[in-house]
Amino acid sequence: MLNVNLFRRSLLSLTNIAQASSTATTTTTTARTVTGPHLLRHALQKQLSQGFHSSTSLWHPRKPRNAHGGGNLRDHFGNYTRLAPMSLRLGVVPPNVNGLVPDHIQKPGYALRGEPSEWAAGIPINGPEDIEKCRRAGQLAKKILELGGTLVKPGVSTNEIDRILHEAIIANNAYPSPLNYMGFPKSVCTSVSNVIAHGIPDNRCLEDGDIINIDITVYLDGFHGDTSATYLVGVVDKSGKELVDRTKEALDEAIAICRPGVPFNQIGKTIQAIADRHGYTVSEQFSGHGIGKEFHCLPLIYHHDNDEDGTMEKGMVFTIEPMFCQGTAVGVQWPDKWTVATADGGRSAQFEHTIVITDDGAERLTG
Image (cartoon, rainbow, N blue to C red; front, side, top):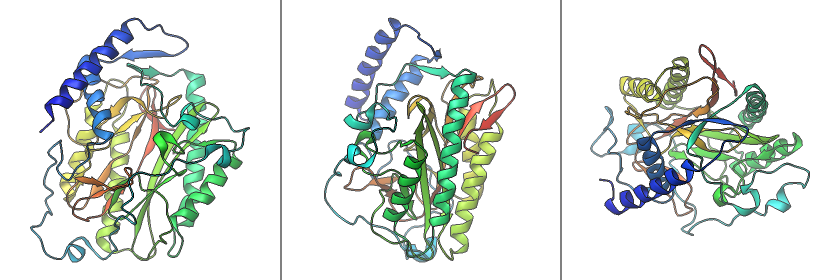
């Protein structure tokens, strides 16, 4: 059940946003005005994502068809090592950006202060020049992700992957967008096996049978490009491979239905249908998002069955990034206040692309 006090604070936030947007003026970017319910849902989503993760889902996720009542979880979900927090220390130490990123690299506004800018009340409609810059950022993100895939093998630590990819991003005169975003301490996210999202690279070495999602976002020439993929580490069991394959299938099918006039909620309905067909659950704690000049902006793209309003228009740029789980999709946040892992230890996989809506479909800017 949604906390009533949280709802009231969100409603107040919505009122403030509405008042501010009524006096705002448009500069060089046009925007599609968002309806009140969407803004309220956005306000709730932001507050929920900033500290309301728990072992009980606020969105009442569906019970998967392959749910079980107990027994040996490892045998049930497959043969792999479940990760647990390496420390009970709360939070993380913010990175020293000045010591990690050369002065000549253009940095997003939050790079030094750690706090992102306030979200605008509308969905940006990008023109040809901005779309081209999104495309360049997206293609660099793709290049860095492909490099990351070549590093995935048993015995390699996620810290080593982060170090190599950080250096590659800097070598391309770009900034690693996650670095110091709300204090995130690394340049990429590495989510292994039962980690759903926001895994922080560390000294643990990858093991035979792991699956790992590498999430890359780069900031190039004033624009962000965001993509991710899940890779197999060594020999992965059949159920692990199937989870990865079906998650990628869901992303591909969701992108295929995108075009002007299509409701945003059709993305979630398409993804949910594939998850249901194969016995998986979909994480409802995370969403896709608009992207461009800002790392995150409207629209929010829900990957589960939903009735969110709004339709796609030419020039909109956003991510689609479904996360499938073997068992429950309820995520438990670790003490580091970033890593979210499945409550039952089942594995999770994710794939992501940044797309732009075109005249008659969608282009994968990170494809």
